[in-house]
Length: 108
Image (tube, rainbow, N blue to C red):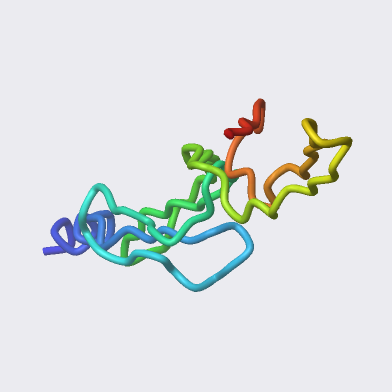
């Protein structure tokens, strides 16, 4: 009978997740979700999600931003004596802000 053969070509055989700039899948399988790890905090990513049958795949691109994280790689401050009771303290922003950098704190 021809009908089961035609219908079986339209069953989902698997899903693929990859980044737009890579053809190497980050995920291949039948689950309807997956976790992609090892990403950079507060960064924009574009993924391609594909649903595949025996006939081919239908793909769609989606974008997402990872959550911020605490800043990393803060260089030491520059300290210059202004006199016997005062110091000038200056610093650069962290080299990896991992989000919107909006304040620094100097503690004694």
